Image 1 (cartoon, rainbow, N blue to C red):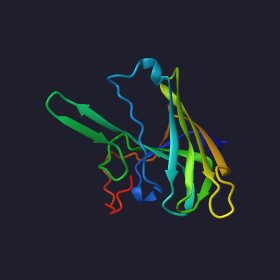
Image 2: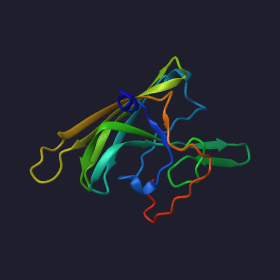
Image 3: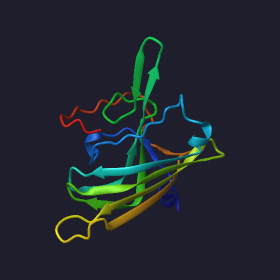
Image 4: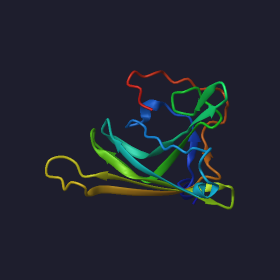
Length: 173
């Protein structure tokens, strides 16, 4: 029963950026312009092209923030490979992995729904489109879900010591 409970919890941890199978995408929220009600439900479409053949166990999430001062702009990033912050990164793990080939498209949606515990429930849908000669284009050969409660994540790093991963040349993040 304990293991079953863990699959509904995202993992907060730092990880090596070489684990990512595709370049990152971004979703911008301008807090100077957005209305509070628009934060109650956030939908982020997902579309990646895998660079390698691999098992995809879920979605890695992090944030970058621009502090737009009157004289100086400063960026804070929590991205894998950047100096580690106490926010780390978030991993949303699927119940079953997706199997992808290099060049195959991964699509889906990350939906965050606010709840009364001052947090979000995460609904993740990811699928892999058929690929290669003879494939029915646009059809999915694999489609997986995850419903996660963000309020009480699994904390993987209990130390606040910064983790420095080796830099990689292909600059995937």
